[in-house]
Image 1 (tube, helix red, strand yellow):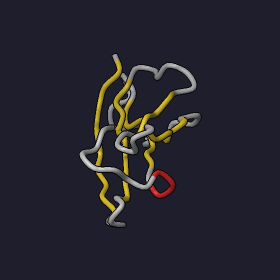
Image 2 (tube, rainbow, N blue to C red; image 1 turned 180 degrees about the vertical axis):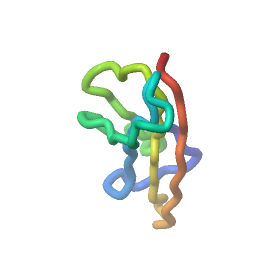
Image 3 (cartoon, rainbow, N blue to C red; image 1 turned 90 degrees about the vertical axis):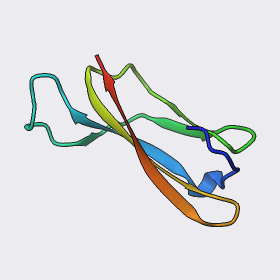
Image 4 (cartoon, rainbow, N blue to C red; image 1 turned 30 degrees about the vertical axis):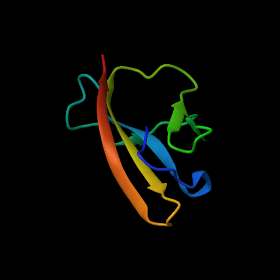
Amino acid sequence: LTFSETFLPQMSGLEVVMTGMPGMAGHHPAMKIAGVKVTASGDRKSLVATMARPLPAGTYDVNWHAVGTDTHRVSGKVSFTVR
């Protein structure tokens, strides 16, 4: 995730959550993905998530939060699908 302004890495982060699996429509509880390493870029404008292993097919949300150098917190969500 790349931001337009710098952020405080120690107060910012993200989590990857599996929200659905093929063939399990409506029956799969959201599940946080373990083993996701989150680092900040050197310029403190990007959060980089590295997975321990490839994600299985399904739908996912990336729930993120960032605290700017002005100490205001912002958050959001990015959704994607792995086929």
